[in-house]
Image (cartoon, rainbow, N blue to C red):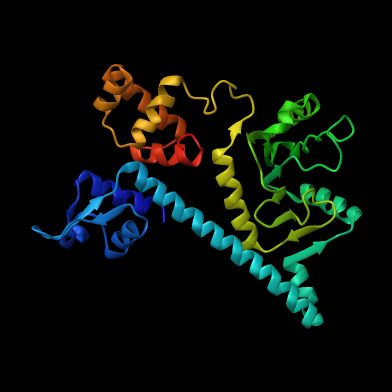
Length: 315
């Protein structure tokens, strides 16, 4: 589910609906039509007096349906990962000989010294990417002794990214440490809330907490399948997060006019209707849409709305 589904929806919108018997030619193969219906991005119109039509849903409802389906898939993937971990643990208890296999994939560590050692080893193992999530769960209050340490310089060969819970920038020590990390080459972004800590090295290693702070229990994961899913989760959060230094008066960092354009665009209004609603000229609206496409690295109006929803810019 992704670009192919959005392209099919765009074709349906451009055709302003079509007879269901012609959907294969105008929209796409039957599986895409079924996905549009399953996601609520389209519905079957009345069968009387004319033949039934495939009708596109309003843009905002269609995109909410698409994102809801994607969220459901991620939740199901997460549950499968956790179920796999539970099954690995049970195999180890029942079949001691399997211990070596499970330890190569998933290792549970409860010793604080070992957790600290593995955390540093994880950082040093990165060769291409280092990613981390940091939230407000700390062993001790944030002070000079517990402030975040800047990441290794990695000799400019490793891309280092971190997403912090926004509280850290409210503390002078935390804010100074984050800026120091940025000066060492880290790319830092903020989210209002982060559910758990996480560390990822390349596509091969990850560390997850088993307790809020992660110091009383942690899980080291070496399974490429699980690490890949965790990387996808990180990338989704990265898209929604705001870069450190974004102007505080705007949660999006967009000019006010572009912030006002987004919800109207999500409602499916034309350029002319948006210009009338905002009491600005048509060229102004078209220029703002071009700016949004460039900022979000997308090519279509629908893609603007999808990207803005992922970032939480459109509720």
